[in-house]
Image (cartoon, rainbow, N blue to C red; front, side, top):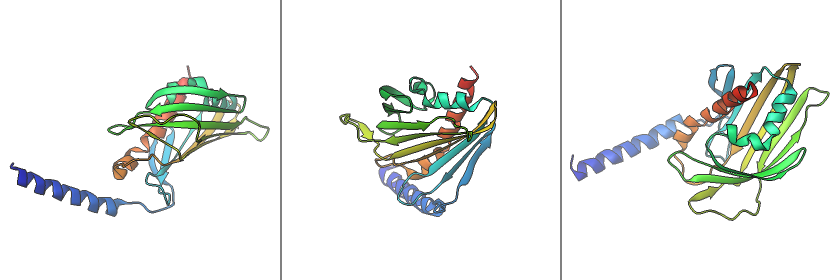
Length: 206
């Protein structure tokens, strides 16, 4: 294939990609089920003003709500189950709040880093608990070849189903920054919460 033929083919593929991206774009605000297997369900939805879909993951753990809550708030254990994590440092760790810095790898893209604050409400008499992670400014200098995430919000809602069973629902909305192949990222985004919940199930059983 000569150079001119290659350029024509490349242009054709680019146009085809742009057309299909528009046709497949999901502008719905409703949750769309993406994964449902091994007791884990993951949904995604488009949110106005965000390139990447928000996602929700849910599963029932065969463990008391206190054990699940402890796992979610034990900062030292985060590197064991956070997907793609390359670096992790605890900045503050208090009873119901904390701060940490992390660097996460992004396949085929520049790494992302973030300074995060975590707040939590332990299990109460109503049989629920809550954990929230939110990006904060922090005082970490920017790194070369790394994009700083400044818009990230993650919540975990826990419901006590019985003394030994807990329902966990996580939701994440974030802006990954940079120029991304949005359609590809949205196709892959559901895998993250699915793998994280799988890892938590395994870790809680050890």
